[in-house]
Image (cartoon, rainbow, N blue to C red; front, side, top):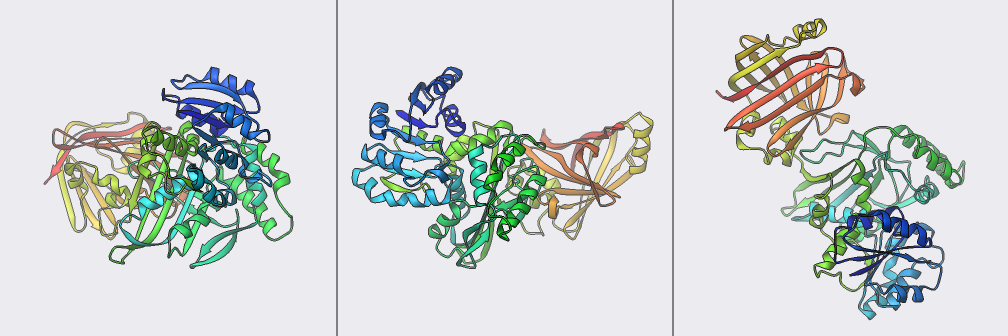
Length: 556
């Protein structure tokens, strides 16, 4: 299969080439105005696909260039699609005339929604034309369809993307954002068309796939995406739709919110002249975790017309997140190789891919995703926080945490070590941690108190307690544990039947403090030889290890 990738040596086209590089059945023509740049990328990539540098000028003789390429599929990954001028669909039109299928990675709302003007022409010659084969709307709408499975109606959809601050952002992307910042965005509210100011409205969300370390609670600002226009047409009865971007560091986003407000108030006409300044700032003032993510929340009615809410979450580690905008095109091409071609016609890509197609692509990268059902407050604390990851844990593990009311007691044996430094001993004594021992009898008593659990751990007659509960606000999706004046918010992460706790926030006397000042905790739980085993080490950078205890427990 021969594929012409316009912008093939650029950001998104180059990533698409890397994603497809393991497929020997493909010949990839990496195209653009600079054949030298295309040659450089072809020489750099290790690929089982055949890579061919190709000069392509979208403003040149398109029929002649397409004939020379002799491609089975054209992928436009060049952009910015907001700036394609008076003939925005000239490449797609040329492909239809040449009877060559066409897809693009556009996320510009007008461009993606407007591609349908070519529908009759594409059907007449029997080729497919798809716009928005990218994160929005291909992935976002696939997530909505997964969430709404079995429902009778969808009433509300909200979604957001949080790119890693270390991925970098192209000038053309920044120019597009700056151009509509503060300007009206068309959406649906209360079941009616409405308008809201871009990058002025904000919401806070924690992206947390079940069993994965969540992103920090992030601020999302309203952005214009194709979903705002396409979802109301897809989902009759949809009353509200919202889409945001959660860029970090947050201080830069807040500055952009403030400037967008000036545009909304008509104190300045546009932020576009500042795009180069924004571009320089965003790509140099970067800090925080090298992680990104995405969420989609759907609210509706199930088959029995009862209110229901589900959410889909994705977290991508390191450099894998920036590949996501190109993964829809990758998934579609792999389906074509397997003989599954989109039906003829021109439309936005909202039904060509299912979430399962993306999940197969995610599995090859450090990307975790999953659906969260809303769990009742009467359920065990860890089930509320872990959602679907709870069900994947072994029965013997769940039995130790399955407290809905009253009390639960488990017993076993443990080994205890204590830190030897003076400060570590003082802190350990103040917290009531047990003395060292090699074979210490241990009892843990769980007592349900409202939506919290009081854990009383007794090692050889020495007891210490903490209160655990589902987090709220910026600690949502976390287990919050309180030891007197110290509060720690932890993420329960899972892998192969093992649960670990990762500290994400902490405070003293209610005052939030940076994580580099937090206790260092390594806490793991697993089932081995049919028994519940625990391994906990608590320390601090200033004290070193304070206490370590590991052993096994069983219900009394």
